[in-house]
Image 1 (cartoon, rainbow, N blue to C red):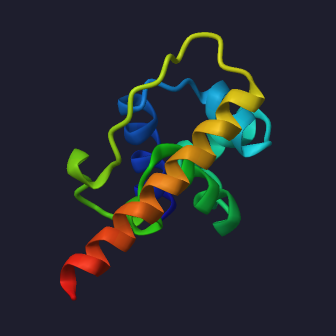
Image 2 (cartoon, rainbow, N blue to C red):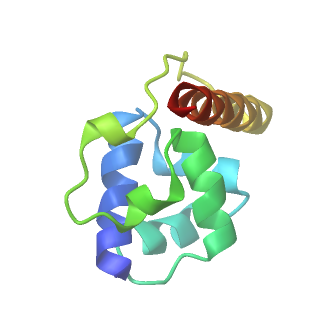
Length: 111
């Protein structure tokens, strides 16, 4: 399972145009630790997976998918150059709000 999660982390990070350093800063960990998660060498704790899901704009289950497709991701456009920790936290917060809105809209439409 660590390999599937790691492959999905790498694929989603690449699609999102983030570096490993960007993601590590957003998660509050060292780049080497994130690299170990992405390579599947270590199991990523659930709290970090949840934070990564917010950063990438996806649901948590996406990391466990064997056949990940891009339509499982929230597409947003941000200036990626020179992001600092505060910028990354704001992106996480923004995408979390958008994901919540989409869920509420889907629930309202289902009624």
